[in-house]
Length: 133
Image (cartoon, rainbow, N blue to C red; front, side):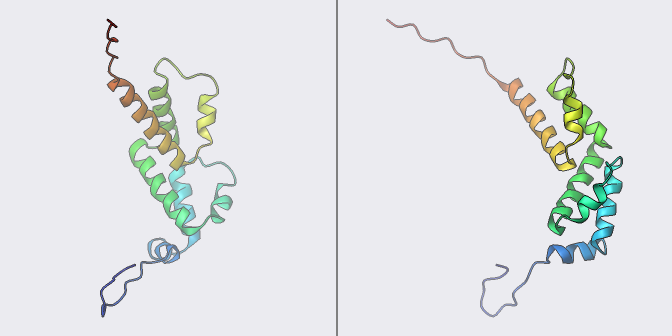
């Protein structure tokens, strides 16, 4: 609900289609911007993205921008995740598993790895149990 006061003009938020039209012109231009940010996108990425809803595409674009700004490339995010999760070296196949993730999922995996490392560093040693009398 935009406004709830009587007599005031109701404000409608823009639809995802209107947001795409205002920021990019059309859906194809938004998809091209996402593919350009991803860089080494797998074959068929553009056609797959053209079938996604406008709101989901806006979310993908936002997260792909965050990934590019923070890490540069997909490879940078994957390397960062692997070094945080496996400081002694990643097991075989772990990099291949992460390479199929979308930018949003990579950013979420990085957040989880960072939070897990911070939580592990905060763990307090357990107090010894009291002796029964």
